[in-house]
Length: 396
Ligand SMILES: [Fe+2]
Image 1 (tube, rainbow, N blue to C red):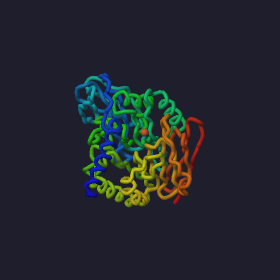
Image 2: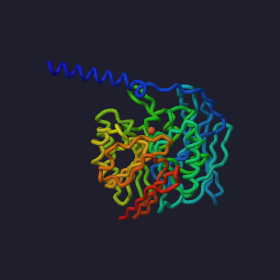
Image 3: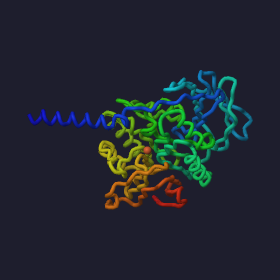
Image 4: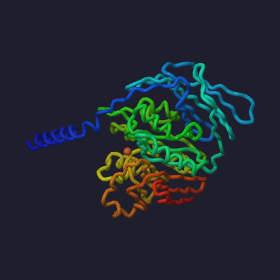
């Protein structure tokens, strides 16, 4: 009898929770109509698994697939190399676009110029540099979620002008307000073309997933961000992957791709192997939802149970989602970042936690991390008050 009453109470509770959260969990906002230019546009530079020798260039052009390639010139060399591009016709709620990706391997140090060609139209020329990466500087951004474009454009201007020699820009997810073309364009415009020069390294957040009984990553994501296909089979097509720099390994965990118990086990095993191997590299993990939550009511027990033990072999773990700034002083250093105008209240008991080294409820900004083989320096900038709010140096 007690069992039946308990089951009934659980069912009623689940029903009430679903009713209250219906909009937030299951309803997607309708996408507005959009037009795709015929000339190659939305050009984004990313890295392959080998940061020293591989780049991937993505673009879109028109609404039908045409023969496409990337023209590549290595400065000081006379030859122009044509690299065939993979193509895909991607439908979203309100439109269609042809997307292309060219994978560049065996790159050597120096300056490269490239042009994206689709059919009889081509982009302007863009440049990127391949350096030895013995010293690597990375910028990290938390949730951006800009509705209009001006705040994120000003933030990116500040961050990128102060860090002109940055080797890559990294995102902890929720770059977009919603998974629709309008917000993809807000993000593209915010970078003012830097996304075709400086490699972009991203993991998806909840805002890049379409809601439903089973969430699904926006089908533009892997066509905007060319990524190395080195995730376990179960996570191919999500934003789970890793990139090796000479000094560091960056591991991106797509926490929204975790649906079943077996998903947690597969990702945990994969992560553990990547953290333990290559012991000379710094290990940096990027995941949208934090293992140690900071905002009131954001505890994610499954994430905590699955990953907090395995992550002890990492050096830095970056997350977003909680819209404030917290760094926990332990191994690894857990860092929660915010790069949007929206802040969430930090849980009341955070200052009783001896492991918390720094927190800031109103933080909006970014982190810069400089790495050599034996040193790691982190600075956290608050762009609203124009000041450094946290810094950390690690050596070995
Ligand atoms: Fe967010």
